[in-house]
Length: 458
Image 1 (cartoon, rainbow, N blue to C red):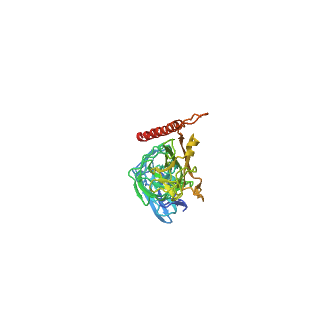
Image 2: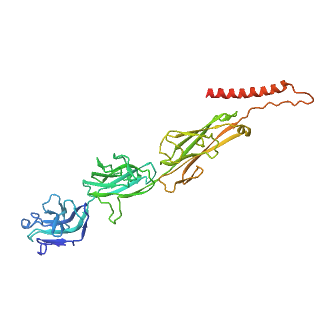
Image 3: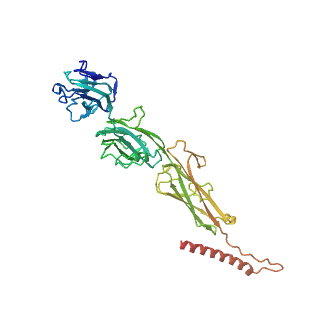
């Protein structure tokens, strides 16, 4: 639509007006613009002194109230560009822009261009490409890695992408993460996601971070140029998919034009419960009845989640019995009772237990190795399917628990017996009986001395 200076329909009149159906979103920043061109500016040629310059007013209206407007005279504005038309007629071209404004509430508006010049002499103006641009920076959210083992870390990155005007803009947002996900520190770190670093966007300068809780925090800052990133280290010790969406934004948009959310992501956490048992016997060779074998058990939480219902079981039941309780004599570190109520935290010091076995004649007669196997078990409190059942005999049955089995062997070395010579056709002298018996005693004493010296050396 143009005003050729021949008709009065656009003199001091609206050149264009949209319907009141342009939506605004509260908190978003907008700017209206239109391109205008004029020929026959005052003083350019011919009857230049009498030619009048157009006065263009661009407004964003809520009903009849102007939310923002700008008044420009392209012929004299320093931002206008002088051009020459095909017929050598001089002209000026200018993009008229309102100041950016932030919508305080959501609603619909209209866009209007009005020519305020009263004269039809000169005043030859045209317009093109009227638009209302959303200048609100876009906020994106990203966990990297998106899946972690419980107790380890992920880097949470926020990308603030500026619009093509590249203006300086203030922004803020709140991130109420699930309580199972917490900030390790409020100090920003560098982004780690290759897809983010490939953008080449710098880190935000001196953002302000305020914590409402370990999982809820607010970040505020200023973006300039193409945008900026701000990243934090987060962690979780609890299994689950933990979806997370930013809320309470100011000066930011959190969805694409098609409505796809951009400030939401999910952190998946998987636990890896594990337990370790090491069992040793001392000494590892038994040589006499009454000798005491000491078994040592070391139980360690080697996983990344706390363990519950931790218990040591040894079904071979070879340990010495406490006559008072009728149970095996098992002594453990303070605080560990081996009664299925014990827990073992992540990175906790190993628990050490000991039990003894007194060598019997039957043990030595059996010879070979006395192999004894024990098992340490526990449950994962974060996994509802990880359970235990206390049986009537005092043993515990675990379902979906963790376990570790370890065996210790003791060699049985019975004393060497001295063979006696059978005597026929005569009597047995005392010497024939005593000397072999004495040899047996001497052998036993010798073995005992060897073991005694080994213990002293140990």
